Amino acid sequence: MKKKKIAIVFGTRPEAIKMAPVILELKKHQDEFEPCIIVSAQHREMLDQVLSVFDIKPDHDLDIMKRNQTLSDITSDVLKGIESVFLEEQPDMVLVHGDTTTSFAAALAAYYHQIPIGHVEAGLRTYDKYFPFPEEGNRQLIDAITDLFFVPTETTKQNLLKEGKDEKQIVVTGNTVIDAVHYTKNSTTRHPTLDLMDSKPNQKWILLTSHRRENYGEPMQNIFEAIIDVVNKHPNVEVLLPVHLSPVVQQMARKLLGNHQRIHLIEPLEVDVFHQVMNKAYLVLTDSGGLQEEAPALDKPVLVLRDKTERPEGLETGTLKVIGTKKAHVINEVNELLNNNERYQQMSEAVNPYGDGFASSRIVKEIIRYFE
Ligand code: UD1
Ligand code: UDP
Image (tube, rainbow, N blue to C red; front, side, top):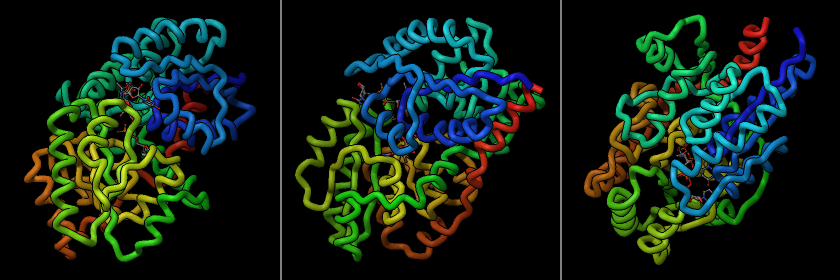
């Protein structure tokens, strides 16, 4: 096989974490592939943190991030910015990930240049175009023009088959985030947050994250007020909230949670430190997608701060529970996990359905097969 140039395009923290293992795997196949790493930098600081942990140096950096960027800003800046890169590099395939606006715009650009598209983490669906927004729209639009679907689970494969996709184009790989968890698990990087947790070993630490656009405003306010209630009622509970750099999240977190002794607002953590923190936490409370997949791999129960999830596998095995964003409901569900040990054990011991740590090697094997 003639050496193929594979463009890997991403722009945000979670895409970087989930694409890094694929890049490392492609690099092991130097006779077959020449990886070309293109970042949009839809996220700047949070992207650079990941690049540094995995020691990845982009070949092209579109550097598009603006404060309070709109979805149209991201879409148009990526679409236009990537054109000259594709013309210069002439990739044989473009790999995009998941459901961000960078991924959608990069896939659209690849389609305009008639370059085959591989979609990593394809097939996730809620079938509600506003939950999550704009991710559900983005991933359906990407899958409309994808040539190779790398789906994480059997359920996601079934979604695509029901939509009429050809089975020959779909391969079940597991989620590459589990590969990333395997990569970081031997990290010995220290951080003040780890020291803080170690200094209070008898406390129950809740790891909280929230950043979704559909939770901006009242839902996020409800979540934060609920957590204050929980902490006030349980002297042995402490909360860690690495605050997403979105100005909307920053403002609300500082306003509502900035003055509580047992609620710790911290900067976004390097992913290897973040995984160590999760490992020490008692439970995870989140609206994040990636955390729903990682936490079960570390035997942590996850209460999902959304009304719907595109990750039903974790509901089936019992490691996730969708609790929405109503204040009273969030309080009750967190209290239940803090007080009911049997329930806690059931959730933490449930099987992780998201992969075995070899997703990237399956993806690369399939790309080889595609070109043969
Ligand atoms: C984006 C993705 C979302 C993904 C999330 C992961 C879209 C539309 N949304 O949402 O699917 O779940 O990333 O975190 O693709 N910011 C900084 N520095 C950073 C990162 C962000 O200042 O390192 C600021 C940006 O300037 C922007 C705001 O945060 O104003 C929001 O970033 P944006 O990428 O637009 O949306 P996210 O909510 O991060
Ligand atoms: N993460 C991180 N540092 C943090 C918080 C999260 O490295 O302070 C990682 C986490 O391990 C997961 C990913 O970021 O892999 C999730 O990203 P995010 O919640 O921003 O996006 P989503 O998964 O919802 O798209």
